[in-house]
Image (cartoon, rainbow, N blue to C red; front, side, top):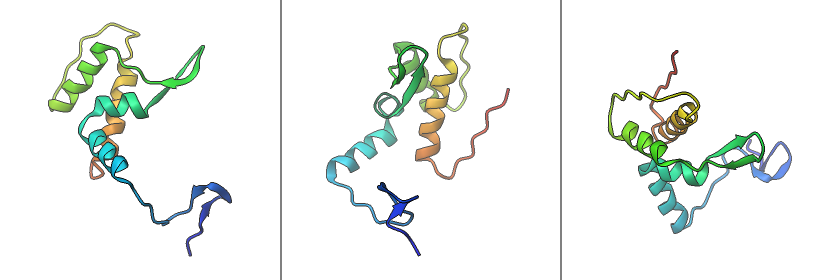
Length: 109
């Protein structure tokens, strides 16, 4: 038996509750599924040491990195330390996992 709310919170829908999407939401979902840079810029947040939770504003080289990963099967990035590589890769992997539900993802070091 499905409940209308999750954990008694009226702001959260319970499991198996039907959702209705308007045309704009569907169009935005389709755009997110096709463009990982748009998805990262508009729906991802990072935690900054001084500013707390803030939007993930990608630098140009990070956008290029995401586009390269999206368009190529194998990618090698030769980059210095502290350039946001891990965060950028995780942003792309999150996009990939959300829009490719049959996928398996592993991060090996």
